[in-house]
Image 1 (tube, rainbow, N blue to C red):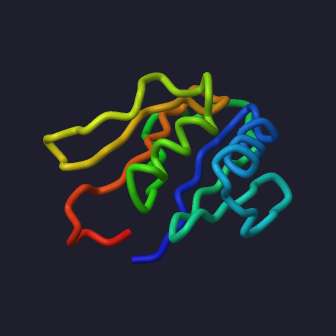
Image 2: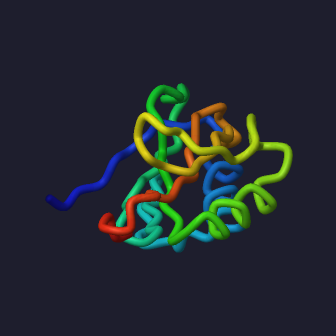
Image 3: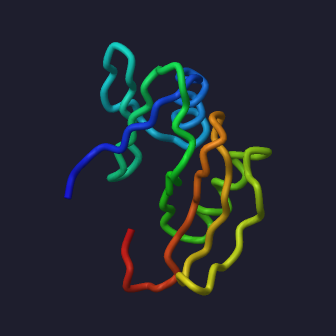
Length: 116
């Protein structure tokens, strides 16, 4: 399945800068009022609107625990918790907030048979 998840934002430039400068996403497509970003196989768009969609979670996958730890260092104060094992899902992860207050999860799968 291919697709793009779009979010409305009142903070277009700050949100795009967070995902590009801090997370490491690339601008995949610029449209008149929307920017579509690509990070691995994730396509997510942020559209300049007079309201903000801050529900849902954007999950960024890392190759391993060291990658999750590196993201934790990069996001700094945006992190809302330290990296930890979530046994229910067999993942290593932490949560952060983007400039809109949207939840961003950084994770890796601990099962070696699950490839990123």
